Length: 226
Length: 207
Image (tube, rainbow over all chains, first blue to last red; front, side, top):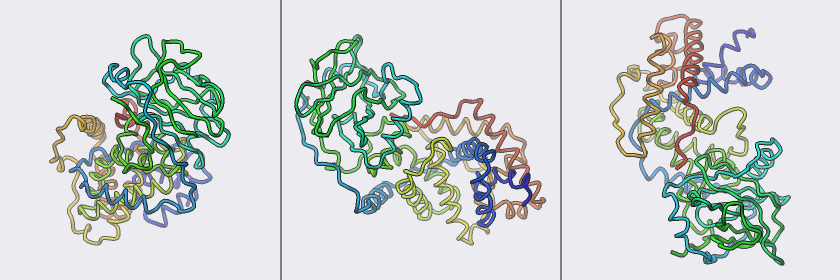
């Protein structure tokens, strides 16, 4: 097919309006055509937007159950299970947090640099299939990559005025080390911890006066060993 | 109230824990076989996905199959998702649409069904708070569609919702294939520009 013609197939491809052989042909072309790949980003968004117009009834609840059962069965048997985590009582009352804004918001990473390095590190950790996942309460989760780099994703309520959340790395021996501050925002940006997490360390989140503290004074959540 | 740090694996996948996470983070977690993250993505997009699949395949059981297959594909191929190539929502809805189209193309009976455009299918009212955003989004896309010339809108809607190939579409509408191609191309580009101007590039509420 002539080049200008095959470029023109990007829209039909985005709309799934190609038959199988046309689709294959376009995908082969796509692999080597940066222009089409770029164009397809916007055309794909526009085509997907049409999905919102096709509103219908809610899917039956049984579909969700069936899907999640399938997903559960589908888990690769060779995946190393996450280490068993222990249930630890939180040291402080959740009321401190609950008293803050009632809206559940995502993380606003205080001082999160937009440097590409940091974004890369976040993407690397979140995309690492071998990373360990640690829960901190029901609203926060830390992913720890092989090199100990760790990313926090949290949907804690906004810290009260004048307060901040502080993340702690608690080594097996020694005292808790500060690993970053955050308040909260709707964007729920994943936050790269400023400190790597050694094997066997625990993680904690405390609530502190704005600016943070050298030692945790009001721990909200503690994980089991990472 | 004392909170306990619960082992995630002990719980039935429920999206509550993840419901505030951005799509990208959920997909990254899904890539690591986090079932709760998949459940959260399902809860966020299943309504749109099922509506879309039902619109294309016109049969509840087949629509469920398409949605299930699409989310299984999300589960299995999340590690291959490339954020520079698509937004997560686009990627997910593209998988749903592709499955629905594949299903409907195997079904001969669709050829007997009259074609409809969005104007004729407007029966489902959405009322609950959590669905208001979906309704808003729907209205925005509908308004954008109305700004397109009739032939372009028709080409987009029939291609996307009826699952017809461009050749089938040309035949059904009795116009040359080249005309269909250019209507789809010009129409989709214009739709993209209108939607971008209207700000429809945010993911669904991450609440």
